[in-house]
Length: 120
Image (tube, rainbow, N blue to C red; front, side, top):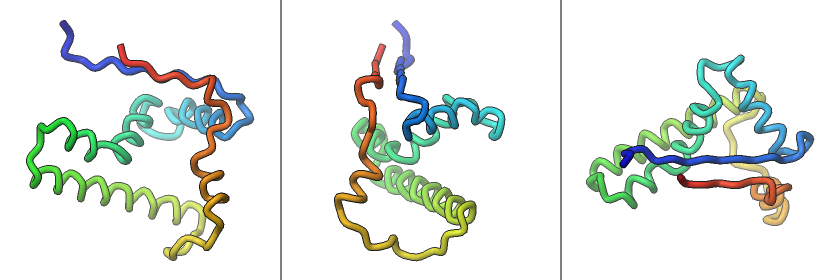
């Protein structure tokens, strides 16, 4: 019995879709960053979900979870600063937009039938 968690993510979106552009960027990330595409994906997952996963696992104390959440927030804020610097954005609140517009921009996955996630 293995003590490893096998997790597989496969996607085949159209190359011109937002998801296709993102996956091509991640695939070519090894040329730009000292991280493999798998490391880039794992880093992004940790930034969004690590505190929640550790809380649900029950393996950390409340104090440890608080420190992990604070470190995660620090890393997210660092990444936000990097995006602001890279794209010349001021540190200000987001522009006022309709809820539908924000939902469409953030949550719309164009080709969900080409994406599969599996646990082995």
